[in-house]
Length: 108
Image (tube, rainbow, N blue to C red; front, side, top):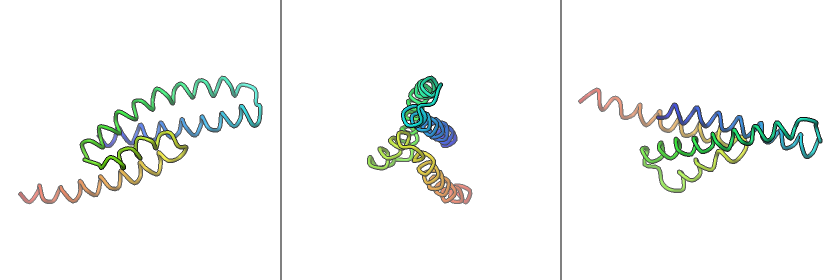
């Protein structure tokens, strides 16, 4: 469950950074081909962001996150580079939680 969230967080983050660079190339630098690039990357990011939302919501529900944290994780896919930082924090938190729970299970 954590792995699929992590993969989608990185995919969504990379596509959003590419989309941001494409928009800069299109509107600021007026580069040829930037419009097509932006359209393709924008469509890919849009569809894959929906998959990210499903995986992040599923993870948050099972981890019993408060609503505010759940919303922040869901919105991280819309802010360039935020998905990378949020994914890192969530992964460390959940991995340490699993590690803390594992010895108790092994002792029982």
